[in-house]
Length: 190
Length: 167
Image 1 (tube, rainbow over the protein chains, first blue to last red):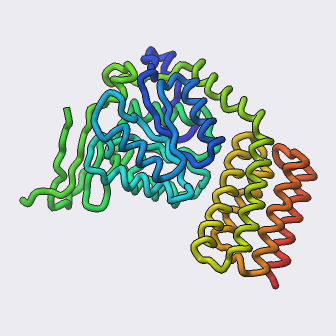
Image 2: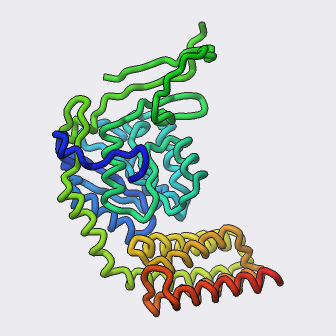
Image 3: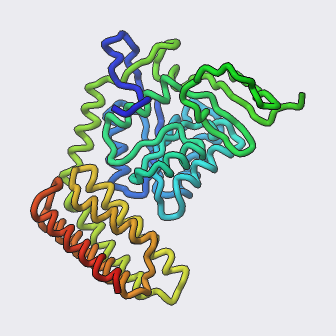
């Protein structure tokens, strides 16, 4: 069990069994073999629709064609490989988080990489990833990330040098002086 | 006080609503569905050998292309990137099905590609050594790690790297 992630054990505690039948997930992965593996796993887990993109350009096209107009058919989540032939997952992530269209800007993104370095985790986080999943993939790892995104969504922070989910996963008690000159503007969307 | 340029946006949790979740309660994904998902991943192992053979053949071609097109910087960069990506793909696929030795060689080649100068004869020997041991690991179908054969292949690769890096 990885620290901070949600266990799929709420059944015994009376939680709701999630129905993923209306979910649409985009898998961005340059290896067709891994993409099929992820896709079939998600479908078996009950995800209603899985679409695939094999490179950065294809990913942007798929996101635009599905989410340019807010509808019930938008992509709900992206599983994003890091290394691709025409760029990195970071390029896609940066493009998403800086997009003007909120149906694109706020799509939850799980970075899925074979690199296990802390640098990549920090880079993904600083570019606005919601979760990072280290390959090899497993149904349990996917489940943990999906549940965390569904059950514990973090507010998005929009600052001059960062757009993405709040990088603080916990709110620690603080009784010192708040040295920020300008308090952030808090927006609750309906 | 001037207006802040930092916004904290609390979005409505549409995903939870879409999944049928209620209020602040956490939910779960049907464990049987998760087990089916895992089974579908494991079933793909049937295709492991075919897939790895295809990628190893592509690695051979990418390496040949890289060596033969060194005069064209654009093609050189593209071929190097292709080799790097195939090495990374092998690493991922092998790791998924617990072919640790193949994964080790894939990762080693991928990392070496990040500092590879294809004009350097020493580097050429090291890449060739990687490709040879990957084919050997594939043909002997070594799974897991720690077997005698696995250790021997790792020693062969590491000796090649060590010997040629000193030149």
